Image (cartoon, rainbow, N blue to C red; front, side, top):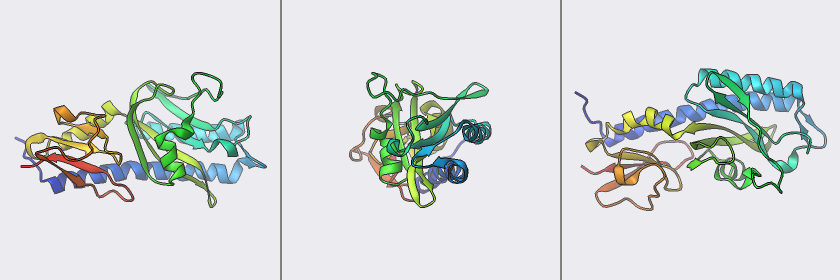
Length: 238
């Protein structure tokens, strides 16, 4: 028989899990930044030659190998600082037991133009220079999955040049986090992002993607202890 945990225990477990994800992103971000800082041409704009792309690819493959829950990982530059002949997105995705570089449409005249600089995960990680969890959302111009994207600033030297990020599918998050949420009092709880969007939930009326502007009657919003973020736990009051 499983016993319910206190709300404090649930928020602690969620906070620790989220912190561990961002620690992983920070570690791979440092490895990417080392390659960019030491070996990528920057005169007058960033240019990533094929030899260095292979190094970045190896780092991404190692990460995805050891982090089976992660669906994709990479670094994304601010467009204006990248040479037009060099991809602004260096992103690798999981394909069963293999990994491949994801190609994006960077032609502004194309209907599938990937205008990522307007997206929440880039505006948060680059524009606000902050940890960001974007979604859940359908990534129509990427991998066509219901995902969340976790980003941090990509800093080379003292300059923020883009973001480092990773994708976690919502169904993967559910497998990881629903067992924690079900231990809440009455087994009814949800993880809510900084914009009030439900990420993962065990509350039928407030499923993944629902917007929570304030705590519904009978529920409370409790802050998580995640550095520099305002994530919350929606939990039924006992």
